[in-house]
Amino acid sequence: MQEEKFFYVYMVADRSRVLYVGFTSDLYQRVLQHRRGTFQGFTSRYGCNRLVWFERYGSSLEAIAREKQIKRWRREKKIFLIELENPRWEDLAKDWGMKMEFYREE
Image: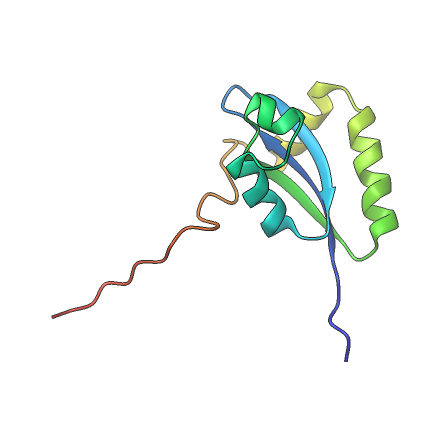
């Protein structure tokens, strides 16, 4: 049986809320690329490395259409979309890629 594939539209931001809208089929890896600065261009130049919003789709065509739609929006509308689900602009992936430390009683 073939594993179901998902596609994501997402927004990353820097601390001063500069926004970047993107599309990916691997949200985990893409966020780590933004965080490490290995995704060249706008996000590495402006330090947009905090995942503040995302949506999941079952079709790449749907996700690409949604990404293009959001990129055409004014900043205020993007902020409204983020704040519907993430009013504090928390990094939704803050613990991704971190080493897990386990407490062990002696």
